[in-house]
Image 1 (cartoon, rainbow, N blue to C red):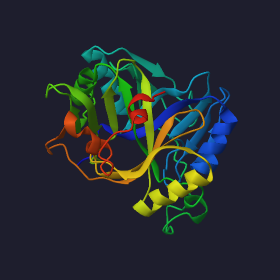
Image 2 (cartoon, rainbow, N blue to C red):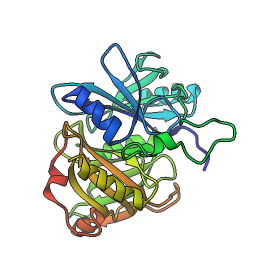
Image 3 (cartoon, rainbow, N blue to C red):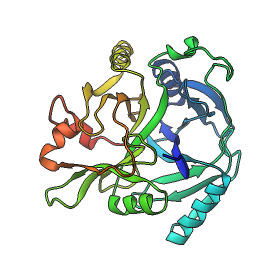
Length: 310
């Protein structure tokens, strides 16, 4: 498929309760690379095989959670068109000037019906992945084995109301498509939706929830099941609070661990999943099979997974 319009998830800005404790966790345990700090007190990170300057932005606050989630778009003309399309659709947008976020161009910010702030941007400095662009080695040895060392920031799951309106906005304006969904007892209303702008199983997901603007988790991609098991070892060694796993999803078929950062923000380390395309029929899960849909091995949900959000 041609990669046009919205390309991929680009960054998530997270609130943490103790900045330096969180910097140590994201840098040394999770194994992200710190790429800068700004005058606002924000600390920037990237996964080792990402090229752009940042994908995770931390700042200290009195409550944990997510401030905004950003997608990179193909170019500046695409950014202008999507801004115009959003306003024509009835969505109020805000222009955030270039440089307000380190090494990042102008951003278009808007609120979606679930109460989350979404951003679009076209430009971010190429920071590289520790290897040259001419005749590189297979991987950057010094970076790829530091901590859990995910390849990239991959997606997030957000909790909030009116997810049917979110789906419509993402499909009709931003060009996303539905890959999987979980339906409630009436067989019509969605509990959860999984959406892609690429050929990944999902780039963002939403669960119906009465409180707006909540974060369930941010997710990081690993290369293999063995790396997921290694991540579990490192979490145990560092006394990380594990929610569940290692296990497998029915939805997306990925293998996974869920755990919490020191502030209580949930994160996922996963690998696998399938490739999909816009012409693929969405997969439907019924509420009576939601256990294996989320945790395929246990075939049941733990209560904390459903109720703990930030």
